[in-house]
Image (cartoon, rainbow over all chains, first blue to last red; front, side, top):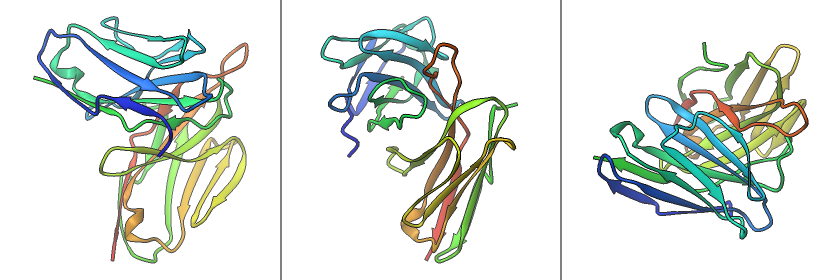
Length: 114
Length: 113
């Protein structure tokens, strides 16, 4: 158990809908990273938040957005969902944003768009 | 061309064999990570390297920064080692810190009893 929690574990929805994925980092960790794992693209970095502020963006679509709240939990919002958005979404946390920090991964949210 | 290349893509071996998984990258990095993903999907961080060599139990990870290459070794392999092993790199960023990870496609390892 990494100490990172994600909810829900599974999510089934329809095209065009909007969903919110939630991540709670390990106690004391200030950084949250979001990653997407799909069959065709593999694992990709989406976005990084540190202490409530966006720090880096990766391959995140404009239909997707994220935020980190004062209690440090983070939410990833996916809107106008398409079939290709079906994937495993992971969050990971680390104490700060240093390059030599281990990232601790949550169990993931499996999203299926029908 | 992917920035992070892993080989082999698939590896089947017998219990007890010495396993080597290779990772090459084409960009300057601040750190390299080896991750393990089990069939259930969960990802566990095995090692984070910026230089040299690290050992944890039967797992050994090495990195050669000049050659932009890393290897993950498993000694006395066991069926419970069956998983996908993923190499990931963290690029450098001006002003300190680093971006998110860039991943290889993974090596699917099966250890047969």
